[in-house]
Amino acid sequence: MDPQRPPQIRFDDGAAYEAFMGVWSRLAGDEFLRWLAPPSGWRWADVGCGNGAFSELLVERCAPKEVQGIDPSEEQLVFARTRLAAAAAQFRQGDAMALPWADDAFDAAVMALVIFFVPDPARGVAEMARVVRPGGRVSAYAWDILGGGFPYAALQEEMTAIGSPPAWPPSAEASRMTAMQALWNDAGLVDVTTHEIVVQRTFADFESFWSIARTGPRLSASIAGMAADRREAFRSRLRERLTADADGRITCSARANAIQGKVA
Image 1 (spheres, rainbow, N blue to C red):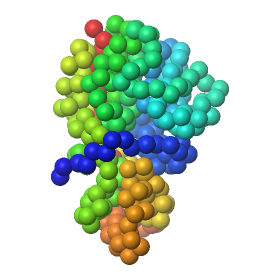
Image 2 (cartoon, rainbow, N blue to C red):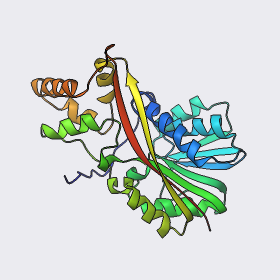
Image 3 (tube, rainbow, N blue to C red):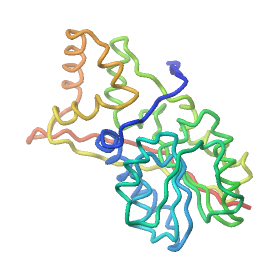
Image 4 (tube, rainbow, N blue to C red):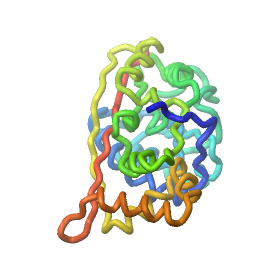
């Protein structure tokens, strides 16, 4: 299947995105930080910080000296500033491929579920390496979306099966582990290591899953554009596919590829 590559997928509602992806981000982010095991007191650049879900984890788990977040969506940043109003975190609008910070300004830079949205991932990784001091870390984790690891992969696959495939991120290939390794090596990073993250999320019932899953920025327009009978047929297919437990709960799994390297 050849992914469709639209010019941009926007995330402009911080609260809606929290229900759709923020919970997943924290689940994967917890495992990512356990693997990364960074020391306290570091200065962090959170590139593509969105609504601040991962920035919040950094503050809660890593006792950072500083967190600076950057994202193209001002709407998402408003939500981030609200959730971390009392923390040592600052957020600004900007571009992952042209970071506004000086060389060697941070101890670590991270992209959390972002790299497949960066139009030129190589530039994004090079920019992270530029703003991190020698010996500091550059890291990322990304849903393995081409390998079926996206949290709502079942929904995407059923949409494709009925001839209404959702939009794909502009750099979907960058979510592959081999692609991430090549990006880190090409950026001159050393001691590069990788890790696979697997997480699960349980929804109270199918209706809870459906109400959240269909709000995704890559999915909502396609679902809303379906004729009513086609949308109901799609919904029924999805319900049949997702097996509920004895209490009606739906449990979904997701898989992400993680990587880290040091600035030489």
